[in-house]
Length: 161
Image (cartoon, rainbow, N blue to C red; front, side, top):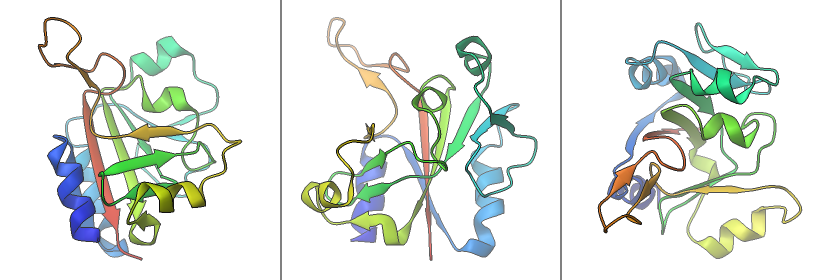
C-alpha cells in the first residue's frame, strides 16, 4: 500500500521521498534546498530552520514566500492524494496555496488504501483540501499550465513511524 501511494504521488509529477524520523531533517533540507523563505503552521511540532510561523500572515506576505511545510490528515494509496483538514500541523488553507512549493509530511500510519477509508477518518464538518499533485490546469486550449490554482511544485515526504 505504501509503495502504491509513492507511485501514485509520483504519477502526478510530484516529488516524493521516504525517510525515517532520524532522516527527516535531511529530507526537509533537501526538499527546501532551492527555497529562500519558508512558512510553517503554528501547530507544526517540527523545527524547520529559518521558517516563519504563520500567525495570520497576509496574502501578500505569503505570496512572497517560496515554500510551505505542513503535516497531513491522510494519504490515499489508490489515488496518490493527500488530504488536509487544516488542524494545527496543517494550518490555514492559504499557506498551502500561495507559495510555489508545498512540502507535505505524511506519516506511514496515515496512508489508507482507498477514498472510502479516507472518508471514514475525516470529519465532514472540517474544511478539507484534497491534493493530487502540483496545481495544474488544461483549461486554456488544452495546454497544461502549472501553478494557477496553487503551488507549482509538491514534495511529499513519507515518514516512517
